[in-house]
Amino acid sequence: MAEKPKAVVLLSGGMDSCVTAAIANQTHRLALLHASYGQRTERRERRSFDEIADFYNAHERLVVRFDALSQIGGSALTDRGIAVPEKGEALAPEVTIPMSYVPFRNAHFLSAAVSWAEVIGATAIFIGAVAEDSSGYPDCRPEYYRAFEALIREGTRPETHIAIVTPVIAMRKSQIVQRAVEIGAPLDRTWSCYQFEDEACGVCDSCRLRLAAFAGAGLRDPIAYRVQVAR
Amino acid sequence: MAEKPKAVVLLSGGMDSCVTAAIANQTHRLALLHASYGQRTERRERRSFDEIADFYNAHERLVVRFDALSQIGGSALTDRGIAVPEKGEALAPEVTIPMSYVPFRNAHFLSAAVSWAEVIGATAIFIGAVAEDSSGYPDCRPEYYRAFEALIREGTRPETHIAIVTPVIAMRKSQIVQRAVEIGAPLDRTWSCYQFEDEACGVCDSCRLRLAAFAGAGLRDPIAYRVQVAR
Image 1 (tube, chains in turn purple, brown):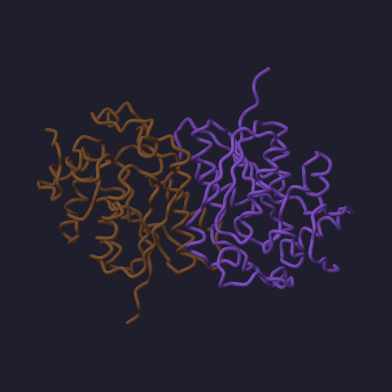
Image 2: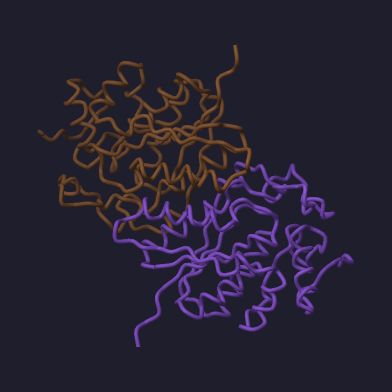
């Protein structure tokens, strides 16, 4: 039997990337890439990455520091001068781009993924972007990934062919939770909170989306929260 | 009189980026971005960046480390296990992609440039890529920059508009030298050698291209060389 092809999976340690890794694992050998970029919960996300990588017994792992993002700032996630939104105001329909948007962040991560994929011979990059039921980041939409694939075609060796795969991009968050349970993705090892590292805050945008997703799926979130806001 | 618009200029410290900064300086306020990525001549290139930035009295400067590129390797510039080509063999017509190619390198630099431009309100990114008379890197061709502009449109805030400007992309290296002299770009402060930091080696691909450019322009290169190969 031919060996499975190799895929680079961007694994932040959050729920979406964990399910994405689980899906990639069904068809590809995993090469897991984790980004640290001075985000508030950097150490906690790294722990989730390690634990999920261990769960899937991934041999190829790469952890990269992206200094540019913290140096440049401009986001509540990387800039201590900008508060993390707590009251769901950034999720209101009239707010198109939330304060947690890190300008052009995913291009930094995808660039590293492409460089690594080209060197190790991976033919796909999996990323757990979610378009619809997410925070409204411009770099989480399908059009963005088609544009990135066009860039890869222009900017790599002629013999290099790398697809970008976004298996959860059209799912609602509650469907992602359901899918995770179906395929045995270790959601208890994931971390989503933008603010804290011991217990999830329960009130930042990311915690709100996560809690709503579990509620929508009729399931209990296995991680610990300081506060759980009634929905 | 209205203030000039702001541009991010990628300034490696080499000849092409120095001339590009000189051209950008005619129409824009300069925000200079320098990348260090574990390349062999990192310290020397940084010195050139500082000296050129001082020459243009640039107030906004950003120096970023790109750890991913040295971690990933795969190039003679960043991987100590791969020798820097010395005999011009990598410049032969049958070699399409030379060993000094750093996989998908410019996407890392451009991603930082876009993030910074979006935060500081710059409307253009200048990069000194040279397509024709260069080393055959896939990410130095006009098609690549058009694809990157499409990516910027998809991946930034709706109100963000950032053009990528490549003023020397169609020039021959000798024309770049001539242009530098015409507009007073400080070529004596630039560095091109891939190998050494005290005197240029004179035999790597980059030195060969530079020396040929000065010869073609009928001018003397103001920097010091260990060896100058007859052409």
